[in-house]
Length: 411
Image (cartoon, rainbow, N blue to C red):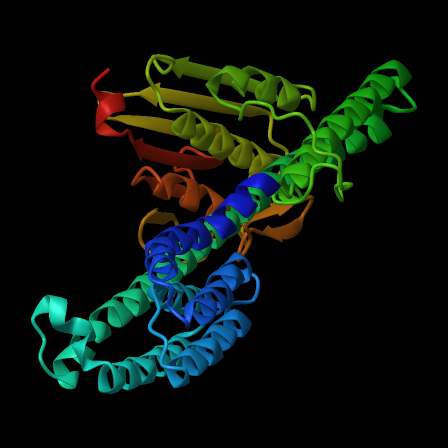
């Protein structure tokens, strides 16, 4: 890596030196008394190119002073080409106003050179200092524009990387919410059941507490993995210690893991019926993750807010162009439960509030929470709709429709 940086720094100096050599050989062959001045000024203009990226303004200012001294000494150099490289470097690494000032300095030098040596552009057919000045100004403007373009491109790339990092952190935060909320809901339900059965059925109470421990360990492992991803810093030297040990990367959950998720809920004593039909072939991993998280959030909602639920049904059906998710529980709703049904297109913003559910006689509000919002955002990726509310047959229903991408729907 260091050798690569050295090569990048040295390359412009080598190129400009190669352009300068023929001129120096010519003056050496003709015993020019100013040959020493040619060599000195050429070296002073070319060598600092090696440090131009580390000290762009200082090397530019030094080269400008050398060029002015060269002009005063009436020495015309091919090495003046280095000024364009210095200008490009300043324009590519500093704001526009600094680049314009640097270009102005070079343009002043172009004016001085055109006035003193108007015949410099005779090879291009120019006959006056003004025409020579215009000829010299073209490369100056080109170097300025190239440098500004390079800086803007680098800034756009950096902004894109930052946006990607923010999006990744947002995704990880959503994953952590889903994992922690579901695991805590399962653990609370199991703990309450263990307390009630401790005196009469100590063996079942012990099994419930062991399941609590297993669920907690699983949630802790997943949280550590996500924190490792969140704090991963690939730009740092690999030898530096990381804030969190990066856990091995595991595949995101999908339809194949729905069985484990339902078993976890069954361990709380609820009867869970499931029907997952014709979904395995050709569904994008992102759609599988969205379905998994929607089911997980709906089950968490039941565990946290439903009153005395006994049965949950989970149905996932793939149609020709879409996937339908339906989660229904038979938990009772208090009279205070809002009857408002929320049905909204996930790609649109709305001010509607999720309906309310209660647990153990105390109203549990999903209002303003992340659950319904998370389901809506996941469905939004696939232009889906989400409906959550009391079911006319009793209980609570969460229904989602996700539109599959055309290439997946064709399979």
